[in-house]
Image (cartoon, rainbow, N blue to C red; front, side, top):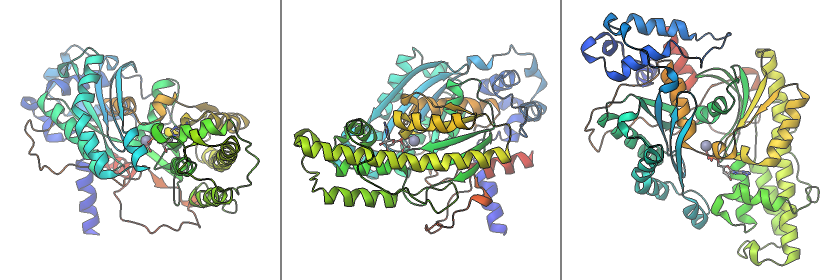
Length: 473
Ligand code: KG4
Ligand code: ZN
């Protein structure tokens, strides 16, 4: 017991909550602390009436800790905060500068599409090296495009997990270098929270609580978002994520993977007959909100073999009959993959409305949410339930720096950040990266009976860390 408590408190101390001794020392009160204290009280961002995590109570705690001499400073509105966001959790090196009012000042994404196409998937070591090669340039270009220098920033936000640790480390190292050198606070961001919250940047009226379906290459999550940092996990995948199934199907069909498999399948599916191959919908007998795509992948593989499709012949060189069988498989796969989402979303909405009857929206985000067929089908489900679909534009669904910067702003305003790191951090410094990091606690009634995965030891969820820290205040 004792050891688990100490692990947890270690985790809180590194979860961006203002260290009290620092705040109570006037000598150490820095420009960015004053800025935060003066701006956050006026934030229009967090006006969730049902919120147990109330902004005003949070800030009164902070204000009590600060020297009164700062209370007369001129307020800098939240709208004027300028946050740099850095994202390197998988195969995109991305950065963006976003203003507190949601204005995107610049964004740059350097994708590893060529590497991906050559290897047929992400190779962690190569991906890490590719991030290292371009990170400085990506951040510089982001600042240049915004017509800013580091001195104009209010804070730096960076994804610390989940993702590939070798890749996460590159972003975290860069963020800490910038923050240390320019005396800026640093904000640690959960990749899946960022995919969720970017919806609040594009839809300013999106209030907590809401339901979110997060669909990407590595994740398939249905969550109930109660508040910032507070999520209930209604469902997750018991094996592969939907994006992985799109990518493998594209590879086995010999499609051009340079834009990743999803867009290639979506395009080819437009030419095919979605009813022609009768794939079965996964997990029909399990009345929960969990997902499985491994079985569908196997069905696709068998269908490809039965039609003698040779993936070594690129689709561009295929005969018209061969092309049409590939298109039929792509369309049939896409239809069933999305039917699985539809069925799970319908149930998740029912569950979520029982827990939080005030829910009005379903957010759909993550790379796969850029698929127009996915959007159209889910829009129908949402409409049938009298809700609103909130789906970020495709460029904000796939991995990007904007979502990280924006999540940084949301956290910064409520005081979740770390002080600037030391200027010259040693090269061998052990960075806090969290490759496996759940977003929320599992909904007890939604636990899958089909769960086959061994429970691997993982980091405490973001939600449990936030809740524990709120109780400590
Ligand atoms: O969120 P994301 O950019 O990176 C991860 O966090 O994984 O998602 C990437 C995934 C890939 O599997 C890619 O094939 C898929 O999103 N994707 C799509 C589409 N665009 C990207 N899947 C289906 N249709 C699309 N148009
Ligand atoms: Zn992602």
